[in-house]
Image (tube, rainbow, N blue to C red; front, side, top):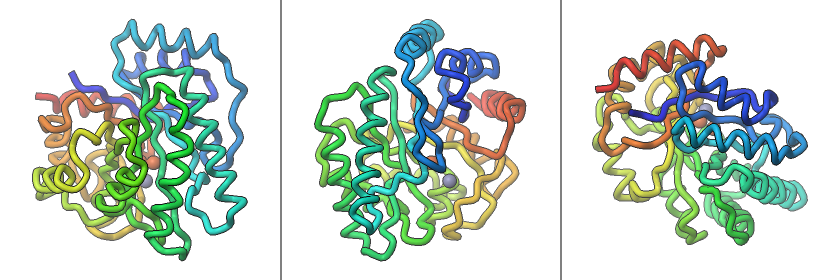
Length: 275
Ligand code: FE
Ligand code: FE
Ligand code: ZN
């Protein structure tokens, strides 16, 4: 049994998301902790969180993968904006404590001309501060396409952040579209890419996947998601991923351009590939 799910709308509430997930054949899901293109966060609802977690347990779902806002750039050049991003991260982790045992994934950030090394140290500083209180949440750095000055397009950059923070509560979420766009050929060399990940970061840090096909070619550094089987990755790549022993047990989240019905069909498609 694989944990497969998709992005759901957090505006319906946590318990409603668990129910929606079950309805469409998912047994995990992702949601934005706040407006993905802003910073507005909904009022907290502890009763809804508790009810959601009870249902989550009862249904035997895999870890949920909450997603931080795209606008949260921990290595932006302006110190005030950077401090604000760091406070958003701290607030997100504090909020995740109401959904214990789950994951919080975010895009490491864009150094906007400051340089990769400076970017990495600013991200690590914000994470070290945010992880000081022991929240029951695992924080995942997402592998990125390497668009513009994005950090996380190379496994080494993620390792450097993880090494600088030195916390067991830090892992990686591998996005299939992003790694392909970044230049890791998971179509022809999935085993080699995973070996490379193991060598550089360590497979024990790999805690979740984003399943997306890509509109673009290897090393395009574009980050344009496509529906499963309709892009340059293709169905057989996803069949290999779904059944890869090194990836067994990890929550796999669809972020494809779909409505709920489209997601339901894609989840069914992936489940048919399970061996
Ligand atoms: Fe993402
Ligand atoms: Fe992603
Ligand atoms: Zn993306």
